[in-house]
Image (cartoon, rainbow, N blue to C red; front, side, top):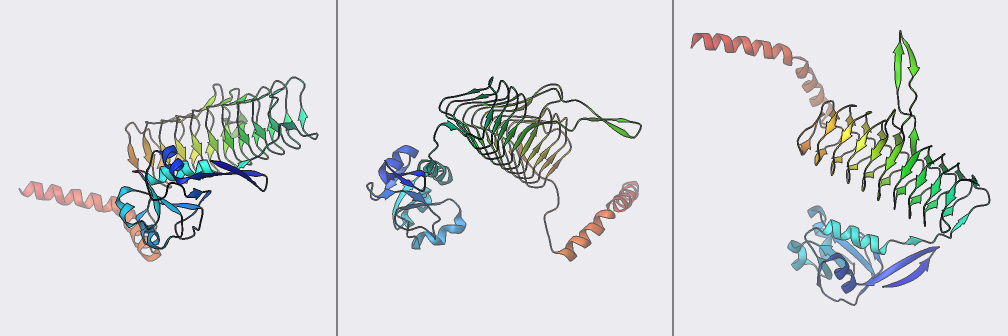
Length: 351
C-alpha cells in the first residue's frame, strides 16, 4: 500500500493482489496492477476497480476500461480485465471502497471560537471545530472530531474515534459509543412528543430519560432521535440510520438494523436486531418487531410482528385510470362480500 495527499486528504493505493488478500477474493490476472479508486463499470479508467453485482449492468462488462472488476464467479469467464472473484461482490466492493476511501486529515485542536466548559473533558487528540459549544461535564473521546457549530450538552459524551459533522446537536445526557459517524443537522436527545389532554387542552409531559447509542453507529443528515420520557431511548451497536428519520421517545433499536430515509418510529416501539426498514415506513408506538424482519418501502406497521420475514403494505403505483377504477372497486368490497355470503348460503342450502 502507498499513500499520497490530495486536497488535504490522504489517498491510498494498493496492488490488486493485496486487495484480493484483504477481502478474501480469488484473483484473476495481474496481481501487480495498482488500484487507487473505485468507479462504475461504464465510467472507469486506468487505476480504477469496478464491480458487477446486478445483472442489469452485465452489458458494460465487455467494454469496461477499468483495470480490474469485482464480480461473482458466474461472470468471471466473461471479464476482459483482471478480476477479484467472490460470492458477494457488493460486499467486496464495500470493503475495497473503504480501503481506498480518502482519509481527511484532522489536526487535534480546539478552535479559538469554541466554548468549552471548564468541567468538560476533551481528549488531547480530539478536534473541536469553530463555534462548537461543549457544556459542563461533557466528554469527548480520543481522536473524535466535532464539526463547526456542533453542540454537546451537559453530561453528554462521545466515545473514541467518532466523526461528528457540522451543526450536530447532542442534548444533555446523550451518550454515544465508539467510532460513531454523525452527519450534519442531526439532533439527538430533544424532548419526546409527550402530551396529555386536559379537556381539550394539551399538557406537556416532562421528558426525564436520555439517549444511549452504541458503537459503530451511523446517523444520517437531519435525523432526529428523541430522549426517553422516563427510561432511555436506545440505539444498539452497528445500527445504520439514513437521512430524515424520526425515532420517538423510548424506542429501542436492535443491533445491526438498517433504516432508510423518511421512516418514522413511534414512541416505545422495540425494533429487533438485523432488521431492514425501507424508505418512508411508519411504525406505530408501543409495538414490537422481531429480529430479522424486513419491511418494504412505505409500509405502515400498526401491530406487533412476532416472526422474521419480509412484510409489505400499501398499493404500488399504477396508471391513474387503473388506480381510480381499483379504488372504486375497493369501496364496493364490503357490499360484494355480503352478496357473496348470501349466494354461498343459498348454494349450501340447495345442496
